[in-house]
Image (cartoon, rainbow, N blue to C red; front, side, top):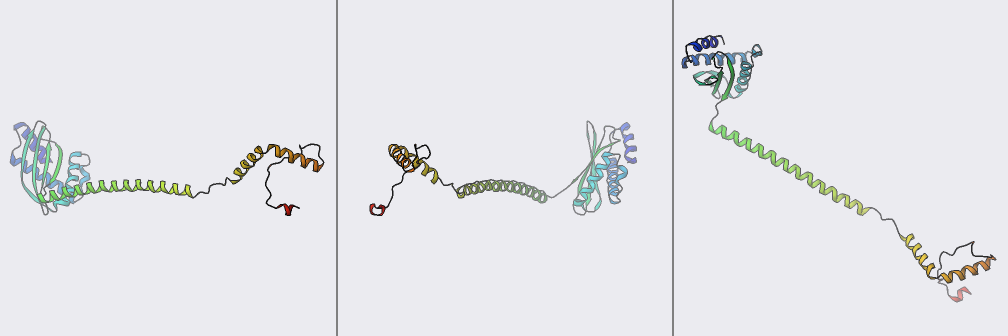
Amino acid sequence: MATLAACGQEESINGPISQEQALIEGTSIVEMMNTMVVYDAMEQYANDPAIYSGCEGWKSSLKDIGEYQGVDGASISYTEDGATITVNTLGSSHNAEVEIALDETYTRIVAITTNVQYSTGEILFKALMNTVIGMGTVFAVLILISLIISCFTLISKFEKKQKKEEPVPAAAPVVEQIAAKEELSDDTELVAVIAAAIAAYEGAASTDGFVVRSIRKSNKSKWQNA
């Protein structure tokens, strides 16, 4: 960090950073990050968000990079807001490019990004896996929705079956009462005669004390009645 600041201050006066200086500064920053990660000393840069997040990115990238094996060149590009040093790092499993963004004075690190370099086959395989996982998730959700909808149909059928199995209350007494009323309404004169006969038999002065509710035909023969 001190080397970068010193060189940056000098170059901000004399001109842009040269490729050789970019290689030196980029290499020192990458090796510093690797040392911080290996010895778990990242917390000393907790107050510097750019360096701390850069160390975290390098730490997560080491899973694919493997063991850090040095630097294989560096380059620098300029923008309106500053410059970016790109360091080509070597690893036991994969190589990577570490991009170090500097401010307009070339003295302060703005951001550090580690980009692991994968082969074409690995990129295609990851893209295929992402596609399969995405489509699989969509189909799984659709199947789950279909199962839920089918459960609603089964519940509806079960409720209809339960309603069919419920006993229907008997309506026979109501029918008999209606039939009796109809029978009595059709035989009003006969009812009056029978009521008068019963009143005379009982010695009652009127038929107010009893009511004839129904008249049924006897099934006995005349000889049996005699």
